[in-house]
Length: 330
Image 1 (cartoon, rainbow, N blue to C red):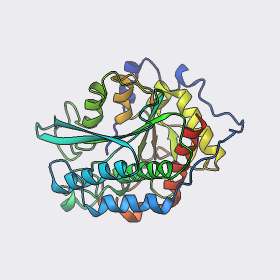
Image 2: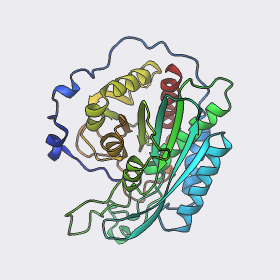
Image 3: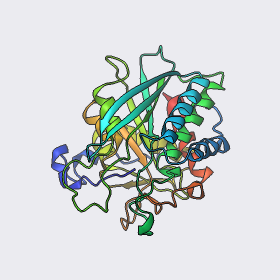
Image 4: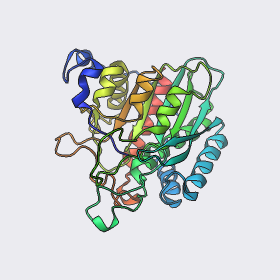
């Protein structure tokens, strides 16, 4: 996936970097009193990432994409979720018609208070950040960029399904499609809409259920690399600082403070932006960012090295356990 800096349009969100919106977001040192949660199996989450990669690149309008989508919907249903497949045709930056599917798995569908857990399941159609220019026009496997977030969410669904105790809130696992089919960096003309996040834009304007609303949402993006640093991303801090505080405080209470870093990150264009802006649901982004600012994302971003070698079970576990604790603490 590609996330663009939107610092240049900070004024559009009515805040300045480091402005008043972040004043109440510092993590408290108070201890969270955690409720019991189901066991998150990191081996299972890793296997879910592997199974996606085994289909090959999941680029819209390809057989691998369609086969993987069917697999994901089936897994959510197998774990007891009420599954909705939102079919759509959207148009890429170059006018290409892309057939996509947002996959929604609803847990406790009868409960009114709902929380969204989201990730994108498609992969990049080009490796435009790869050092090997001869392979930049080839699609990537996207083990971390796409696969890791989905793997965590499938394991969260499995863990809840296998537990006698369910969260008191309703949970909607939303797997957004057509997130990563944006304009390649090697194209000379970079004007106009970059073409990312088409599936989340569609869902935000056309929710899977009429009148749908949620208490808040958490987006996972590139959460499986070794030694990740999840910074407090800027758009999340503007729209949902309270949720950022809740999630980071929970992660730290579980011993994952080295990953969930108490440091502000840049503002990014990602699926959560459109859920916030269009659907008016506060959503945050858990995403691996470089705290030094030397680069934005993990080193294999949009390259052919985004394969299973980039995935660490400890990172998947940290994110999955944190999500389950947040859900069960509600």
